Image (cartoon, rainbow, N blue to C red; front, side):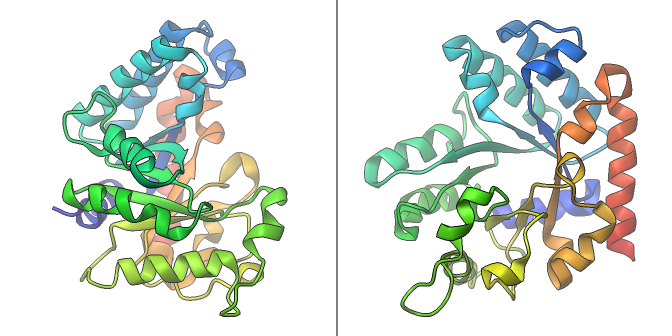
Length: 275
């Protein structure tokens, strides 16, 4: 089963909501948890439990675990294991980017079956050259895993780089999307390589038009200002391929309210796609 097939199955059975697992220090305090590996582990496991029957996809933000060193990674391993055991599709928001054997090693750490950090997909950066992703792409394909390549992000400091023009006339961001389209051209259904395309950016400013069969990981809904009801307006014909990523707008509901928050936002996503 390819990652694209697995993702389409997740959409069909559990919807397009992607629940973030982002243990910010202030959220841990709100949840009456300690800002240490034990608190992170408890936080992550509670999110997994709440999501397991209400959504199909979760996305742990690796940085919040990494800041606690090896013990933080041990907590993350437990959270990833619980998410896999619950049947959730797991995306590690790791934003790895490098060249050659180093990048391959990152990909092997996250995408090898049986690895302590095994997930179904990771976020990767193409800004050392889109060709730098060839090795990780091969590793992902060999293991039925996926990648989400940063294309157009909402942080203002990225705008100049991502909208700069290449010799072809395309923007850098549009060039990344075009390359991913080529990678997915052999896939009959949803591709196994996706892009990160923020819900708060104007695709026209980045020269991004046709998204084809590319899965789109879309941060920016909820706390950052994008409205789930605008999903079709934002992504057009590709809306059904979008992972609607929501973190703080769900996690801020606290341990007693997270289940209801996931249910509400999952219903909003389903309604937006049905419109």
